[in-house]
Image (cartoon, rainbow over all chains, first blue to last red; front, top):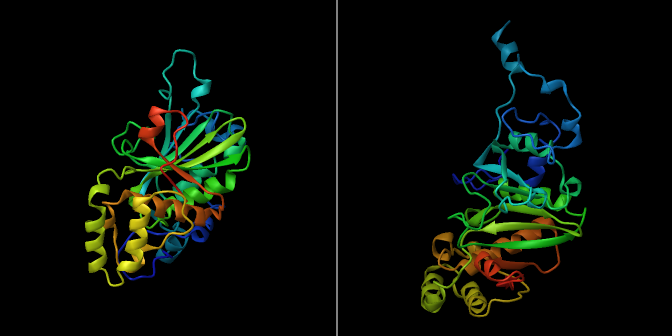
Length: 55
Length: 247
């Protein structure tokens, strides 16, 4: 549901309200992202489930 | 299992953004002595979909929960959040200052307006930064071409021609001309794009672009105080550089 209703092939525009509809459903920190302690919210800092070494 | 069942469980396709964006984090004030300012900046993640944006945003601290001294940036991919970067070197920034702990929503709305391509002249935007300090949080939008040095000598003729070729030309062009001649506090600014004056011609008038970005940003945030635009070059020369434009 891109907001641009002009019919012109243009930028991928998304309204704030549209973007906010995805806020609740995207909760997993991307696996390739860098974890900087001072930046991570407590939610991630307290979760050890995903922190195990793969081997 | 049937093909229909497989389709039913497949996740919906992600929503691509116009361009990838990178989150950067730094806290120069917490760096060990002797480490050059800004040298420990970390690229956190480069995202290219709406879903990835939230996956990062939801897991990093809101500005109110960041330590004093922290700097968080969200910049277009391949633009480093440094004055010296070629895409930033001729640019500047609009800044709003808020009391400590009061910027979370403004920061989120700024990011959403950028990644959602809500700015008429979004191509001019490098990214957004938030600086967390003991008494205030400052949000800035960095833009690419701040200087109007090149535009000034031929302001009259060039914008005049632009206006003549535009369907409803003169009214907005004369307003813009007035502003170009005397950049300063402005009560309102016309949406030139609706008059057929497009980015192609306005690229020669960075002042016009900067003012449009500042005005739209305030609208998106519903922010009513006057905001100022500081050119990076000015900020390099003196710590308390004056705003080139305000709106």
